[in-house]
Image 1 (cartoon, helix red, strand yellow):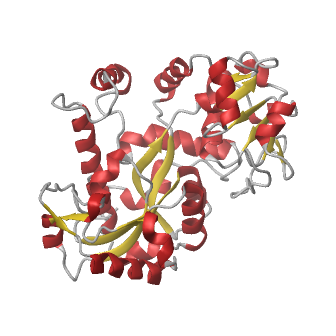
Image 2 (cartoon, rainbow, N blue to C red; image 1 turned 135 degrees about the vertical axis):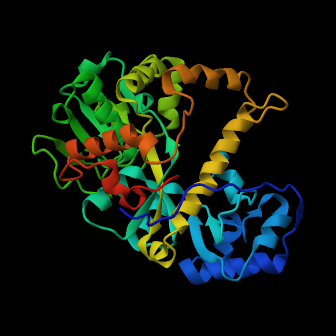
Length: 401
């Protein structure tokens, strides 16, 4: 296959010299965002990252080199991305996306995902991996994935159960478990893990889908190919947190536990995590599957891709360089980047299990993770067939990055 995204990796040089970013420049970019995505100017005060040729946000500063790199021919686009330390060097301008003038915005994850996937309100976005893969499997090629994984989490610790009913994974059979959505990435990986490690099949549990603290959360992605033996009950009148405490549920799987559940876990109360030693279970899971579960990935619109078929590679390279520099900084003993002791020693302790690179980007290094996630999507009725990694990242086949 020809290389539609472009040749191999490049490097970028960091320059710490800074100058003031002029007020009119920020205003101009706010108007640009208004024109492109229709957000009111007042809403941009906290969400707009003023990054003309990538500006350093703190104090309204932009690198001298970034300003010098600006060109009228640079590709302008809007990029929705959450705040991550391993990507900050791109969003604050220390590492540029070559021949591009991106405008970074930050919105709450559910809204950002929904708006991008429903109406493509911007050009590039962080989205749920399972949502993106489901769309590609359905034949929707309005989106082009970039094999960068912004958020990765084992989900063993996302399973909370009533301690008076469930002591071990086998006790989940025949129980009622609350979830926020069948297609939610945390639930997808948790259910897949229970099947792979404990042979607990989805149809052996009755699932109750709804909001955690507030009732009425809709299912965003329907499971069109769900095994008819699997029962998913929508809950519209109560939150699944309330149902757990009232005894109507035996457990919940949630990406982030509500305060009442977290407090119970900490104090040894009625609700506990399914796994007392989740980290050890996660290590066992990784040793068996080689998967560090991908929650989110980066996706661009087909329109942007057709405007510049090399832009995906350039975005990838900038984010990859930021990732490598970030991990190098964690190993720097001259000054601590993370205000926690023994970070370097902890990362070193991961290498015997996970290899030299514990958080890789790209298709090939992540093939076990991608294809396990795709298997889970198929087994759980969200896609109609087993896919390969190249089926959801076809534009990257043969690309040297």
